[in-house]
Image (cartoon, rainbow, N blue to C red; front, side, top):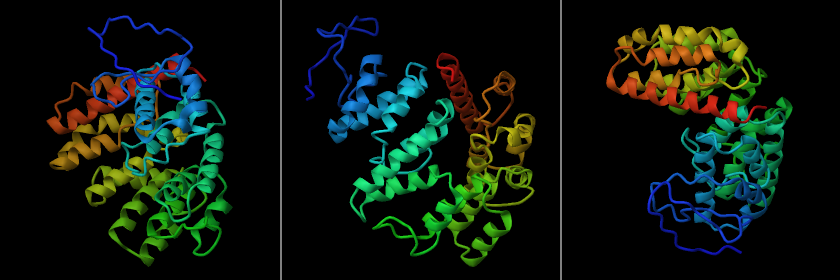
Length: 336
């Protein structure tokens, strides 16, 4: 089992010695410091075996330390996949961009070895089966399962009321649009079908989901749909702009999105000139070409930091450039 011991360090250069170097250790177990404490290789190798023995606090500590380790190019994404294969983070039931499963899909999977999506999907299928019907954990696992499903026929079955959903899963508007969005990402649904779904139930949530889904299509039409919203050729609410940006830069669609990389940096002044207030920062952030890790994209990103942009927009740009550099460092440290 796990034991807890107090640890006091005089400073960041204080050496830390263990009686048994083969012992897995999670530092700052209750996350009471501002320290970044990524797991060492011994711990990372042991976590797939030990993850299910952790209480909720230690599971949160584990995932936060693993995430910081990846962010600082100290943890191999392939080792994270070994952990995901047995302990996907379905306990994090929130599903916004800053939470764990979006991080797994947007950061870890693209940097990990081939076959990662299949391993994650199998793990999530097992998670759905072991969770209680009707529970928040089963819903969390199923949402992630939809996002990793690669078979259009299965997705279509899940998207039909009363067909093939796991016990306790109620097919609501949110799940239907998640299915459509994944179908769009796979290129297994067309723009007209997405428009028809929106026309049938034009709620605010549906409009945002429709923007994400159409922009996720791996086609020039889908990406131009997103671009029109960024540049204001089509006037929409802020949440639709944000969703369009998320859909535009899908991992694995770099061949389609490459022309928009330079266009983004060349259009930054026009973007902030068209939008106002907080929308400027959201647009700059959501449409940053984070899926392109090549040298040319990085050079353009660094140069863009010298532009005269509003403070909010510049802050978001700096954050995204930092994230781009971090992902590039991971790709160098742990090539696949």
